[in-house]
Length: 210
Image (cartoon, rainbow, N blue to C red; front, top):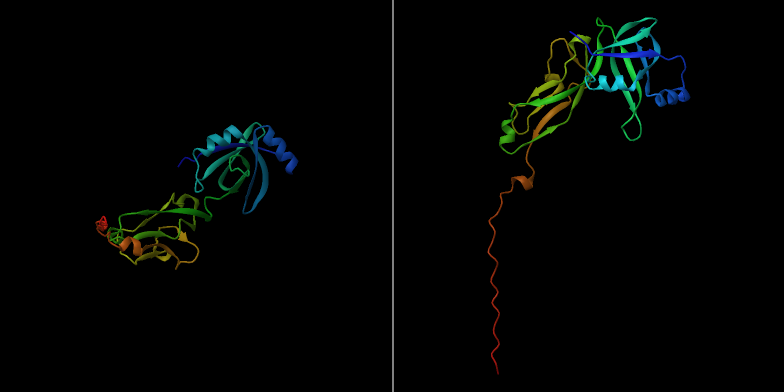
C-alpha cells in the first residue's frame, strides 16, 4: 500500500525565537518522536505541508522523508498533534509520531452511523453519544472510520462499544458506554396539530337612538 509522503529537514536550534524565524521563512517547526526513538526537531516548507494536508487524515500513515546528506531517510509516521494560532488558520507546530509497522498503535477513529432505524420512522430521535473512539491495532489495520448500523434499533434501543467488533482492532475505553440511542420524541413532537378554530363572532349591540 502506498502512503502519502512529506519532505522535511532537520533543525539544529530550538526555542520560540528560532520557531518564529522559521515561520517568517514560510517553514513550519515540527518534531518526530516515538517509542525507542530519539526526538528529532525538523521543519517543513509551508507549501509542502499544504500539499500534504490535502491527502492525510489523523488515521493516515505517511512516509516522512528527512533530508540526510545527499539523500533522504524514510520514516513511517502519523500526525499526532497540530498547533494553530488563536484564529485557527495558521499552523504553528506539528507533532509526528514515528511508528513501527509491527507494533500496535493507539489512534482516535471516527464513528459513522449507517442504516435507517425503524424507531426513527415512528418518530424517535437519533442521539449519538460518541463521535470518535480510541482503538489499538497494527498500523496497517487502522480503519478509516467505524460504521455502526442502526437499522435494527427501535425507540429506546442503544448500541454500546462492547457490541462493535472489528477483526484485528481493539476498542479502548469504557466498553459499556453507549454509542447511539433512539430516544422517544418530545411531548411537543408527539402532540398532534389541532385544527384551527374559527374566530368567535362578537356581535355588538346597537344602541337604540333616543
